[in-house]
Image (cartoon, helix red, strand yellow):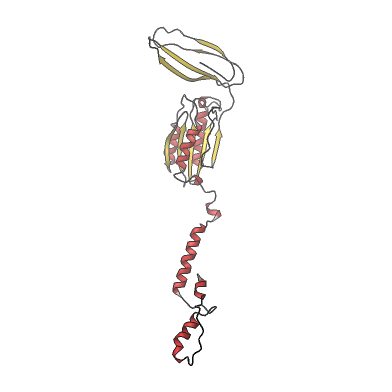
Length: 266
């Protein structure tokens, strides 16, 4: 832009007898002479300031020490699936230990953080949206109860990632409290939020039990009950599984006492 003020008009040279009548033309010639000293020009200064502001906006400057790594949001994901009812955390269940750890993580977070809580098992559930009230979040976390279903971590992460987008995925942190007992046929899908942490509770144990139960009425009367028993241990587990009816006959219909390792029986 400054070069525009140095441009010189191309004039045709012509020999005249006198310059008395050409003084104004000579003044114009001096004004358009190149490499002359700049004069104070308010319009030029305003144009330069506008150009500098536009360039700074396009460059998007920032201070590395003030913005890098700064977090403003926190989403706590607490696993409440059936496996979290295992009592192998110092006399407490995995869910009880996970709830306590989630509350401690909440108390350690800065006061400026807005936090949220998600409980997940077979389906995710938002127990508390983003808020700065630590009391409300603590009560919501302590109310999380165990469920009898499996674990769908991908669905829970998708919900938490959508919540993180409201405050900015680069400014939010996701913390998962789970035993990581995930089904092999359901891989975890990645999400956009990169700051992700897993706090694991419990370990390998003889936690054989009923994974699912379904009852169906028969057309001719009566009902059929389908039970899925899972033994995730590495060895054969001996246990008794029996069923009974609230109405007569109260006698057991079936039982089995030996379950192979990593098996599911119906």
